[in-house]
Structures are given as C-alpha cells and as structure tokens.
Image 1 (cartoon, rainbow, N blue to C red):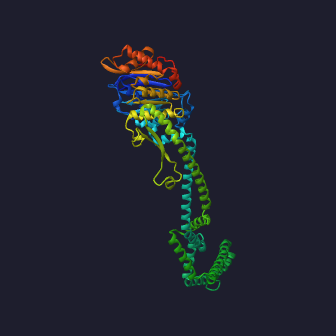
Image 2 (image 1 turned 180 degrees about the horizontal axis):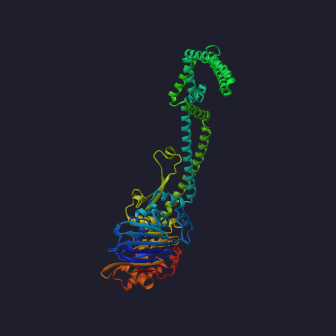
Image 3 (image 1 turned 90 degrees about the horizontal axis):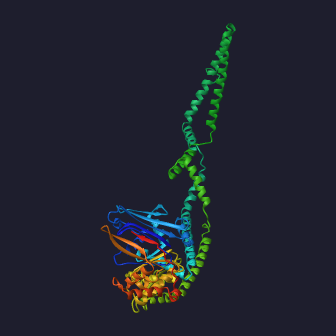
Amino acid sequence: MLAWLSIQGLALVESVEIEFDRGLNVLTGETGAGKSLILGSVGLLLGDRADAAWLRAGASRGAVEGTFDLSARPDLEEALRAEEVETEEGRLVLRREILADGKSRAFVNGRSELLARLRAVGEILVDLHGQHEHQQLLQPERQADFFDGWAGLLTERRALETERSGILAAQAELRRTRDRWEQDRASEATVREDWEELKQAALVAGEEDRLRADRDRLQHRERISRGLAEARAAVAEEEPGAEWAIRRAVRALHAASGLDRSLQGVALEAEQAIETARALHDRIVREEERLADGALDLEQLEGRLDRLHRLKRKHRTDVAGLLELQAELEARVNGFDPAGRDLGAAERALDDRLQAFERRLDALVEHRADRFEAFHREVGARLSRLGFGRAALRIGAVEGAGGRAAVDPTAIPSLEFAFRPNPGEAERPLRRIASGGELSRVMLAVKSLMAERDRVAAMVFDEVDQGIGGAVGEEVGQLLRSLGAHRQVLCITHLPLIAAYGARHFVVSKQVRGGRTTTSVSPVADADRVEEVARLLAGARATETTRRQASELLEGADSPRAASVTPQRKGRKAAARGT
C-alpha cells in the first residue's frame, strides 16, 4: 500500500505529508481546495509528464515522495525484481523532483533512475483512475489480462504466449535453413565445376616460375647447345684446351721447383687447377646431355602455362591463391548435403508442434467463450448497482479480417471491452468512453469483480461519484469499501454517501497565511468527521439536522449490514499534517 505521501513546493502546497492506511481512504474538500493536486502528485510519482508550471510560485524546486509498504505483497516484490528493483525491509520509496528549468529527476530507493523505470515501477504499484494514461484497463493487453485472470486462464494463456514465441523462432530458423539450402543448391554446380577444374589442374606451388624457366631454356636450345660445346672445347684436355695448357704449366713448375723448393707450393696449386678444370668439363658434359635428353617440349610447356594463365584470370588470383581457393571449394563441396539438411524431418516436427499449439489455443478460445456470459452477468449486476440501470459491459475476441487461422494460426486473439450505457444504444469500445465519471464507475464495477486477483498495491479513483447520488452513491461506497478489503483504495469524492464508507477520511482545504494561499490535508475523525460529512450534505449551511444525518450515514456505514459486504474500519489515529 501507499503508506506515506509527501508533497513539497508544488502549486498551492508548501509542505504536506499524508499517512494513508489500508482499506478505503477518502479525500474530500471544497472545490478548488487542491484535491486534484493530490491526484496529480500521485501521477507525478508514477512518471507523468512534469514541467515548471507545477512549481509553487517562488519555489526553485518541488518534489513528491511516496513510501510503499509491500511487506504483505511478495508477488509485487517479485514483479519489482523483474524490473531490477529491490525493496528494503519490504518498503519502496519513489521520489520525483521538478526543477525551475522544467526538468525533472526520478529516484527509486534513493537511486537516480530514468523516468521510464519510474513508470514501469509505478504501473506495478498503482492503478490510477481519472487520468486515461494510467487506466490500465483501457489497454487491450490489460483487458485480456483481466478477463483471463478472472476466468482462471491467465497461466494457460501465458504458457501459450511462450510456446508461440518458440514456434515463431523455430519457423524463422527453418526459413533460414531452407534459404541456405536453396542457395547451396543454386551454387553447388558452379562450385563443383570450379573445384573439379582446379583439382584436375594438379597445381603445384612454385610451378609457374619453373615452367617459365624451362620455356626460356627450350626456346634458346640451339644457342645454349653451341655455347656448351664451345665451353667444353675450351676446357678439354686436348690442345689447345685449358686443361692441356694447365698440365704444361704444372710440368714447368715441377721442373723449376727442383731448382727452387719455394715453387713447390705453386706447382701444387696448379695441380688443383687441373682437377677444377676436369670437374668443370664434366659439368658441361652433363648439361649437354640434359639438354639433349630433356623430355619436355616447348609446345607442352606453352600449353601448361596457358592453362595456369586462364585459371588465374578466371579467379583473379595467382597460383598460391588458386591453391587456397581449391581447398576452400573442397570444404564447401564436402559440406553439401544432397538430402537437403533433412528439411523434411524439421518441417514435420514443426508442423506437429504447431498442431499441438493450435489444439491448446482452440481450447483457450473455447474456455474463454464459456466464461463470457458469466462475466457479462456479474459485471452487469455491479453496473446496475452503480446507477447504470440496464447498461452492459461485454468482452469479446478481436480477430483479423479472414479469421485467426487465415491470418496467423499462432495468433492469440486479443480481447476488448465494449460498453453500452443504455438499451438500444450501440456498444462502443471502452477506450472511447469520454465521461470521466462514467468511465470511473465502469472501472469500479470491473475492479470490484477482480479485487482479489488484481496485483497492484493501491488503486486511486477520481470522479467516481460524478452524476450519481442516493442509493447509487451508497452502492458505490459499499463497492469501494469491498474493494478496499483486498487492495488499498484512495478515492477523491464530493458525495457524503461515499465518504461515509472510508476507513480513513482526509479533508483537503486551503488557507491564506502571510498573504499566500496554502493547501493542507488533515485527517478527520469522530465529531470532525461528522462535521465534514454534514458539509458535504448541506454545504456551508450545516445544521443540527444535517449533522444528525451525517451521524446516521457514518453509523449506517459501520452497521452489521454494511459490515457484511465491507470490512470493519480500523481505528483511526492522527496520521497526516499540513502546513
């Protein structure tokens, strides 16, 4: 519940602190006293738009702060944890500050947060009636949540939503797999052809340079042969070959060394030169033999080089790149699945899953339909008690043109409330109801039906008494108190028949102090409360008669008859102050 509310420096408020209680809390006061400011402040706390116009004249900043006691609501604490918000000893503090430049700051448990986080937390905690943006039941998804929760179908529907997400993801993955397979099929022939061509080419690293060298050698074969022959003749041992000349030099050096021993070393060097010349001669002979016996022919070499050139030009890379491409294409060829990645089995499994889902979805739709009439009957009875006579609120499935299965077999039909104020009038979607009071009473009827299942901590009603009075006002009061047995309720009202049913009663008033108008909020009890209810009955001309009537209203609200439909009021204690 909202245990404590503080408003500082906003509009007519200099400083107000209110300590609310469980059950029904009513706020009354003269027109213009500032009751709407209380409601607006709660809206700011829930993330409503703020600007500098909210500030009290002369104030540099304003603030609204609320403490929520969630110690008895583990379900709400769990919902808050989903928003990454933790309570502290079962309490949660929200704060909104407005600055003179129109900017605002939001805090959750003292930690600065984005406004979006404050709104998300606020939607969990408070259902505020009177401003359309906070009336959760106007949201289509909340209408479905309400009805399915009331009908005991919410768990099944959410399970279906989870399964639907899984099916849609599986369908998307199957489409991607099928697309990849079709792309593979389209490119498979080309990939295989290129791979076979490269494989048959039997490429070898460094082959191109070797082939060019062989080609050059074969193109100049005759000239090379003549050069080798000339070289061999110049080195040959016959006269006048180099080897023959060196042998003559050796003989001459040996003869001279007999006369001069220092020449023996030179003679040995000359002998080594003979060995070198002989080795050179043998090498030249081998080159001549290789040139004569070479198996390659020029035409064959030119053909091989031309093949390499065509492959390089086709794939726009060199031989090293062709070898890498060949390995890549081989991997792709090995990855081709002639069975189509077993798409048939995956499609059958998905079809079975979809059929099972559709059976569960059909059951949900049928169970919903079975509960529609009971809902119409029960909420209609409450509307009648609230002054709508023979009004009707109906709920039905909203499907796309052509039916659900034709558009999307996995679509879970959304639900929409439609309202008919009087017999013979057309039903209109609830979201199009213009009257705030009319809408508030419809919401009250719906909320009273859902009181034990709605998860919010507090509900705030404004204008719920617009256009009603007499017995209908009493019924509204009883319904609000009944609602307060399950959730904290804050109700701003002008109607004494509603105010009498409050477990706590606050009066909003304004005074002029030091030349400035200031709004204050005070709790009333006993005689003070009788006086306030008398004022609601007769305005400023309260008499003993109206005071007696006020006492009778309060006693009637606490009577056994009232207690049979509403909880006993808790004892009151001073819990609010205003300055």
